[in-house]
Image (cartoon, rainbow, N blue to C red):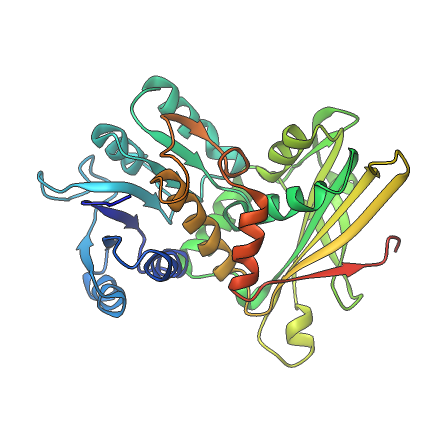
Length: 337
């Protein structure tokens, strides 16, 4: 499918935005891209590196984003927190797809309301999951081995040296201010937990145990509702990753623990780690890129207007293929601790 207008990447000079632009250029060399940021020099450097890309400044406080009246785009990607929702409204006004990654579970209601007010205006992909939905897709790929899933536990280690740039740090602070409670599904009931119930041990790939806690994240309802699992939890720890303990760069490790029954009806448990040696940013960029590709109909048909999530649009098997292409690996672990 040809695209005459460019993909507008808000925060395109940041880590997630620039990584997304790089992947889009590699996968779809003819796709026009617009790198939008507050610092035109940074945005221009990213655009120059990509080739066939333009750089613009934006002002998220303005409904028109500070762009010329005749500016056109094929999609809007918010690779940063769209705090006024002007990026989303801009996409709705121009009737082009919108993708966001920073609203989190506590702020996603803002996007849902905006989408409900103008249901036919644009497709909205809410991808504020961990690594823009990559973890959910990896878990759903593993879930294909099961006839029934009873329990899903996702736990991830974020190296303190791999927290991202200033925007990523600000997101973590904002989301932790909104609530310190975690969200789980327990015996089929979505439940907020605090105190000792929210605390958890997170086991790294090398067996090191870090102190973590349950967090409110979209991965929980996405996995619970996609699989029907009555027990779902996502635990998060910040600390030294296994990669750094080996004297290598910070690694990203996500443990996917599934329990249920297999095709024969026998009990089945799998534990699998999704590991990216060079940290989480490439996985986040991959999640965004998969979403943009699907929204534009560059793979499959263009997406209809409405609210969407990654697991509702993307094929887990294809997503896993792309994860492996960018250097991620899957490591099986023993079925018990």
